[in-house]
Image 1 (cartoon, rainbow over the protein chains, first blue to last red):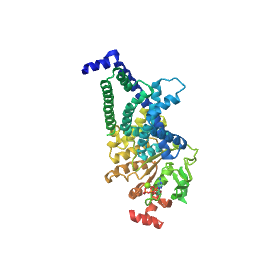
Image 2: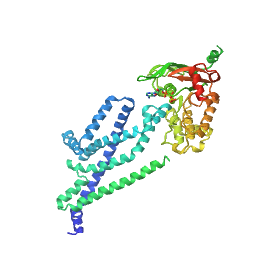
Image 3: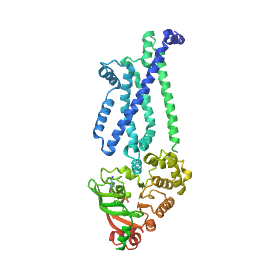
Image 4: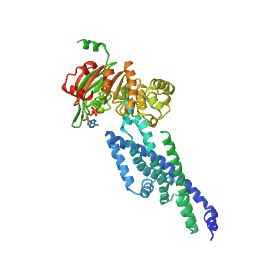
Length: 228
Length: 252
Ligand SMILES: Nc1ncnc2c1ncn2[C@@H]1O[C@H](COP(=O)(O)OP(=O)(O)OP(=O)(O)O)[C@@H](O)[C@H]1O
Ligand SMILES: [Mg+2]
């Protein structure tokens, strides 16, 4: 069979390209919303942890945050996904996309939290003192002065985390969610020709990752130039 | 006696009573008491580690005192129930390391406080900031970022940032110690102007000649205590304690 034939068989016949396109849509949606949840959780956890480290306040919240970080980073994301789908949501009918977003968001939040925390801790303590001496309270100083600088410093690491997350969502097939990877796998199981669908999907992931990397570099350069 | 009468005519701004600060076992401040009046230009000198910075930073509770009392404009700001943030707006502070906000332009550095804390409009805050910038000769740097400025420029901006809050007292912690020698003068000039305008100032410094020039009162600290305190002229020309004599012999 020529490549053209293979292409036709895997993508054109029976409109199989739809598995890829729909799968891509699912993957992007899951990644995007999981990223948003991850950032929200990450910020909250990071602020709790760095506040505790710097002032000794928020002891109980800090303990909870530590448990969350330990559990999430100490177990595989596939297991977390399966637990959330089959254990936590076992008795309710929920959209699998929703479950995936929650699972990957909670997972990503743990990594984002540590990235942002390291960013906050790297800011010169003089910045907090300057903010407080003007009359800003702790939260205001965090929001106006510390976090914007910390965020800028950790942007490369955050971008990296999101690229990792995009690729990690490829295990969503474990709960039979038809994401990009699962779409290719369905085609493979129908046509019995693994080569074209799997390599195509690999190329699509690679393309997205390269695009994200490019955009990230650009953003980084722009942020840096604003300080010089 | 005449001295006391003079003081009574002046308005009391900060009353420090038996202030102490202990870091675990280390007694950085040991029962410091002093009255600071409106228009006072008080210089704090003393050997390294004598508690000068700790004293200054306790005044706006950047360092939490472990004992004693501070009344600022009649209000006990060491009382945990006092909203210290409100009173800090009236106590400008200038740091050795400038501590400008590097992610903001100069103008944004200056207007952040007035806009967010004092409810000023952008236009109003910027107008006031530009006026002050002009007075320190840096109006053309308003759109620059701190990293684009020299040390002397940064410190002048830091002073203006504190002034934009319209403080009743300015606290300086070694404002020229991080500067190259050729930039010290421009910062001292700004402080000189402030003193002329009757700004109340508390200045920790090693610039003894400058203290001699603009201070009206000088404090000598040693081991977390005020070892000697007096009018500037008396202090330098007629030191009493042996430690102050030894200190002055070393630095003059
Ligand atoms: N955060 C802190 N934790 C523990 N010890 C401290 C802390 N800050 C200051 N100290 C100690 O308190 C004492 C007084 O310090 P302080 O900084 O007030 O001295 P200083 O007179 O300002 O000295 P310098 O001229 O070197 O700036 C020193 O022994 C110092 O080591
Ligand atoms: Mg000091």
